[in-house]
Length: 191
View 1 (cartoon, one colour):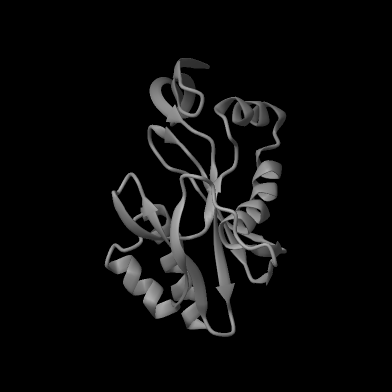
View 2: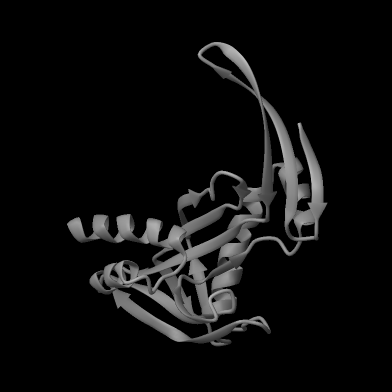
């Protein structure tokens, strides 16, 4: 059971009441949670040169610059997201968003994106990030088309050792991305 306590159109504060079986005994748990629509992140990989494309983006929440994987939101509103949940079409929307966001942010035409991981935010927050590996792409003649509030200084290819250093030195501030990038890069370096 779920009850919406507050909804501003993009974030929703909900209360849930769920029954669980723990060691064969039923237990009812009430929880307060925040929900927002999911996002995508694209690991654009140059396998031959062992590099990943990052953007250097001004992040308002940090009041500073951050290295980021290209990506963005999947739905423009919470209402659209909730409708997609009911219709069981969230993944379809995610898959349509990957090429769109990569085209908008860096001007690449994506071919054959591969889902690597779905990062679930955790206790008290429902906000999934879908991470895709992209190794097949071409440069669009149209170039990027950033949203009005996006400030991206540029894009840079970083080799796997540089990625590791950026993660360790906290120059990639999105911790969930660090948690996806480090195992990915370390596994690639083994090969």
